Length: 259
Image 1: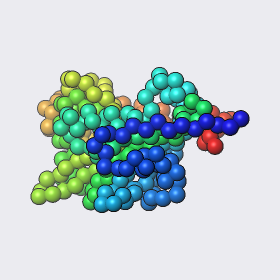
Image 2: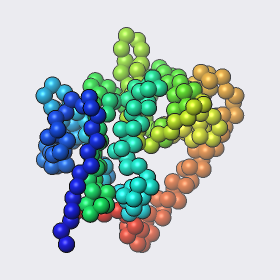
Image 3: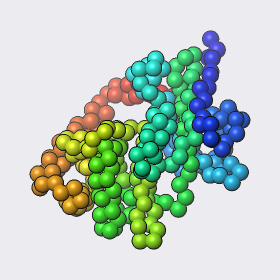
């Protein structure tokens, strides 16, 4: 039986990209562009006239998520990225402008998805310079500002925060924002602890980051202890998960590309 393939295209009215680019994106992505990251997902940059565009291709979802995405019970990642970007910018924080997204459906089932946004020039990730104490202090202050505004990046790792340094000031930009939480009150309690433990895998680096964060938020010493205890449990969970992935038959439950 021949598969029926359809493209669901959502592009902002102010998108500078042509209609033909949106309609042909899956085909264009497969044969053009410069790859800057490739794993389960793939990121490419395209030069379209005088504009550099960043396109992220999301792979076929795990079968359970595929059902949830296809039946409308969960929002696809590319769509969430587009929606979250608007909210982050409205709250006064920086993230690359998103022009739109494309969802590819095969016989009604969600396949690949593409998010399209502006490319950030001359930026580095915090991960590249995490030993710079001045940068980490600025990053801790920035994290405190995010939490005070009720914003929480749920994949808050150093590779997902870009920065530039201009005129003695660090400016940060959030990327990979499909998993993001917004609320109308400051982030407190365990959600804050979970967020704080994510950026730094090294214990000493994490301690410096959290202690610096405390300076900007005027929180007590128990915050550091809660974060470190949570990290201890997370490390053991990660070790158990890694062990389970090695069991016979574990690969059977991994998602496979659909052609």
